[in-house]
Length: 193
Image (cartoon, rainbow, N blue to C red; front, side, top):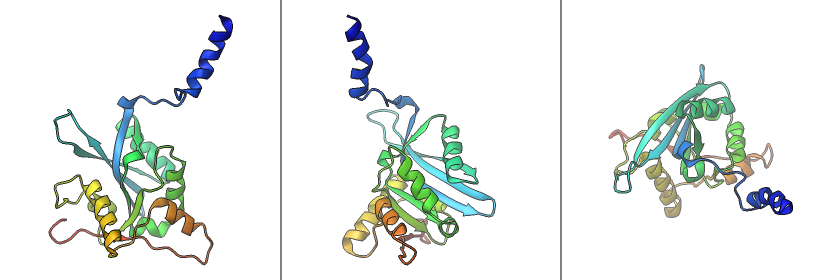
């Protein structure tokens, strides 16, 4: 009897119960935006909430400011009162000012996140802050971050755009000082789309 009680914790760990997280404290992320200026870094996270099985999913935007990437994500998670769940994130936008500060800390942070997929698309917001581009109205009526991810994917398939998932970007970035990389640029049109 004592042996079976000693084996129970081991069996629970093997069954995957050791890293379980309460779903009520997880905020599913569909997209995120990073902006930088003289005051520091600004993060906008687009989370998706659905009130009922019949209800339409709606985006909510959470923002935070900090000087470093880890502190930025910690401040944003503190604002939501839980954890972000990046498994369904489609795109991570950065504006030109944040890109000039260097994207390696962001890429490393996303790689360290257990639920962030290496296939999340990276793109640069041009002519507007990353927050403004992320919140722009989607012409299809979709959630803006999901529509942006679809647009980037379709552009790559048609050959009119570059697809730069996190894993490819990080591979190029770490290949050496002579290797340069480019991210697709996204902007808000005159019609707000």
